[in-house]
Image (cartoon, rainbow, N blue to C red; front, top):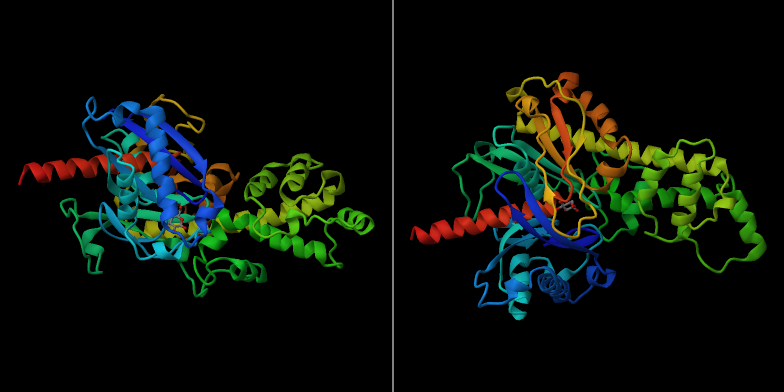
Length: 456
Ligand code: BGC
C-alpha cells in the first residue's frame, strides 16, 4: 500500500527470489477532501477500503479463510516524515506535500491503518512501514544480481523529494530507541532533506519563492522541497508568469489581455488561480525546441488557460526561458544534495572508476494492470563493483529532459567529488520502486517475526 503525494496505489507483489517479480496493481488519485480535513480516520478508512476492493478484484481467494488460512503481510509506503522506532510502527511528525490532517500528527500510522483493516475483517497484518525513498533502494537492490554492487542511496524527485542512504552504525551518534538489527553494522537513514535549510542561510530565495512559501500550507517548512519538487514548480511558474502578465510594463500575453478587455471574461483563468498549474509544463517546455513552439503553446492553453491563438511565439519563448530557469535550478540543487550525501557516506573512497555512462531506465511497466514477469536489470554487471549505485524515482527525474544532466553538472563542481567522482555515480530509475520495495521489506519483516517466534 503506497500513499504518495498524488496517488494511492495498492499492489500485490510475487517475489520469485531470483531478482524477478510479478506485480498486480491499482492506482487512484487521492481525493482532495481527504488530504485537508479534520476527520483523520477518513483517510485510513479510505485506504483500507482500497485494499479491500483490490483483494476482491485480484485475489478473492485470500478472503476465503477455509481455502487460504494465511495472513497477508502488508508494507505501508508512507512518504511523510515519521519517527520510526520499529519496522512496523512510526509516529507522524508533520505533513508535507499539501496534506493537512492535524489529528493524525503524533499518531502511529501503522496502528491507524491496522484498526481500519480489522474493522473490515481483512486477513492482513501491517508488517512494515517504509519511506518511498527506502522502498526505491530495496526494489533496485532486489533486481540487481547478488554478486553485483549494493545500492546505497534511494532518491525521490517527484511530488516531494527525499533521500535515504546507508550509513555505518558507528557514525550514528544520536541515541536510538526501539528495536533494530545491528548485525550488518549499517542502517538506512532517511534524511528528509525536503526541510534542509529552512532558515534559508544558503538556499536561493527570490521574491517568487517567498510568495510561494507564504501561500503554502506549511510556510517556513520544506524550503528545499519547495525549490526542487514537482508539487511546487508549477505554482512557482504560475506566480512568475501571472506577475509578468499583470505588470503593464512587461505585458506577457498581450493578445490575451486586449481580448479580455474587449470581452470581460468572467471565468478566472488558471494563470490567476493558485496551485492550478501542473509541473509537467516544465518538461514540455524544455522538450519543445521547434521554431514556433507549437507543443508548448498548446500546453500553455491546457495549463494556464490562455487560448493558444492568443499566445505568441514570443510569449511562449518567455515561458520557456522561465521554466528552464526553474527546472535547471531545481536540478542543480538536487545535484548538490546528492553530492553532499555521497560525500557524507564516504563511499567514494571505496569504489574504483567506472567505465559506464549515464542513467539507464529500468523496466518501464507504467501501464501494468495485470500480472507480468519483470526481467532483472543485469546491465552493467561488470562495472557495478566500481560505482555508487543510486536508485531514483519520481516524475521530475523521469520526465524532465536534462534533469540528470544538470544534476551531474552540479555534482562535478563539488569539492571532494570532481569529474572522477561524478563518473563513479550511477543513477538508475527504479520505476514504482517504492511500492515493490515496501513489499520486499514487508516480506523480510514477516520472516523475522516468524524466526523470532519459532526460536522462543
Ligand atoms: C516527504 C518524504 C518523502 C518525499 C518524497 C517529502 O515531502 O517528507 O518523506 O520521502 O516527500 O515523496
